[in-house]
Length: 246
Length: 246
Image (cartoon, rainbow over all chains, first blue to last red; front, side, top):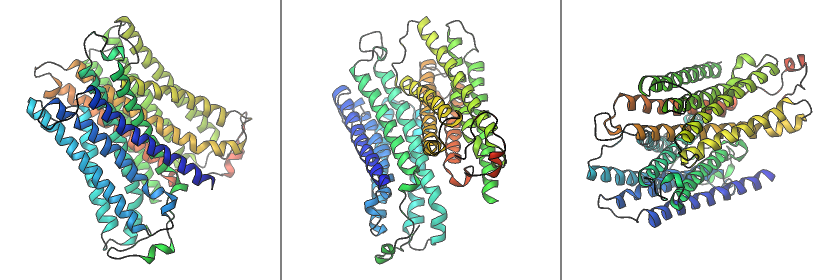
C-alpha cells in the first residue's frame, strides 16, 4: 500500500514536471523569442525546442511510465499497449517535425546541418527512438512473435527506452545552453552572464527537463512498480493481436 | 555462467570506453588547446574538461560498478567498500580541482561564474556527489548505523548514484558543445560547421562519454549482476567497522 501511494506521488510529480516543461519552453519561445512561423526564419527555428521538449522528452516520458500505473494492472494489457505505442508514435512524429523545423531554418540560412555535438546526440536519440518503435511494434504487437522472444526482448526494450531518454536530456541541455549563448551575447544587461529573465527561465527549463527525466527513470527502475507478469484478466480479451504475459 | 560472461564483456567495454574518454579529452586539450598551466589563462581552463571527464565521469563510473564484479562476491565486502569509497573520494577531489580551474580562469578574466545552464547542471552534479559521498560514508561505513537502515538506504544510494552520472553526462555534453562553439568560430575551414579534425575529435569524445555512461547505467540496472545479499564469508573479517549484509 505504501509503495502504491509512493508511486502515485512520483507519477503526479512526473505529470506536473512534464506540464511545467511544456509551459516553460512555450513561454520562452513566445515571450522572448518572438513566437512561431514556418518560413525559414528564426521563428521557424522556435518550433524546434518546443517540439523536441514536448515530443522527445515529455510525451516520451509519459508513454514510458504508462504501464507502471497500478490502476491498469487489473485490466487487459492490450488497450494499454496500443496507448503506449500511440503515445510513442505521436512523440516520434513531433520530434521529426521538430527536426524539420531546424533543418529548414539551417538550409534557408545556408548553415550546415548535423555538425555540433548537440546535433549528433539529438539525431542519435531520434534514430534510436525510430529503431525502438519499430522493434517494439514487431516484438510486442505483431501476433506471430513468440512469447519466449517477448520475454527476452522486454528488459532490453526497457533499458533501451531509458537510454534514449538519457540521450534526449543531454541533447536538450546542450541545445538550450547553445541557444542562450547564441542569442544573449555582448556586454549588455541582457547578456547570458548577467542572467536576465530569459536566461533564468530557460535555465530553469533545463533543470525541469533533468528533474522530469530523473523521475521517469526512477519510476522505470523500481521493480516494485512493474506490472506483474501474469494476470488471468490478460487472457480475457485478444481480438486481433496475440495476447501475451511478457 | 552466460550472465557472468556477458557481465565481463560489459565490464571490459566500460573499462575501454573510460580509458578512451580520458585519452580523447587529454589529446584534445594538449594537441588542439595548447596544453596546461595554472596561471588564470586559457591553459588553466584546459584542466577543467580533463579533470571533470576523468573524475566526475570515468573514475566515478569505475567506482560505481566495482561491487558488480563477480570476482569480489566470494570475498569480504569491507575492503571493496573502502576501495569504492576511496575511488569516489578521488573522483570528487579531481572534480573539485576541475571546478577550481574554471572559477580561477573566469575570475582572472572578470567573467561571471555559474550563469550558464551547463554550469547549473555541472555544479548540481558535484553538490549531489558531495551529499552522496557523505551520506554513503555515514550510512555504510560508520559502525553505529543499523543494518535495517542500510538496507533501506541502499536502493536510494544506487538510484542517486545513477542520477548523478546522468547529470554529469548532460554537463559534459553541454560543456564540450559550448567550448567548440567558443573556439571554432568564423567562416574559415576551422569553424565548427566545417567539422575540422578538432571538432571531430571533441564530438567523438562526447559520444564516448555518453556510451560509457550508458554502459555503466546498464551494469548498475541489471539485477542479476548485483552482489548477492548474504555471504558467510562476509562475517569472517570485520576489524573496525561493523560488517553488514546490505
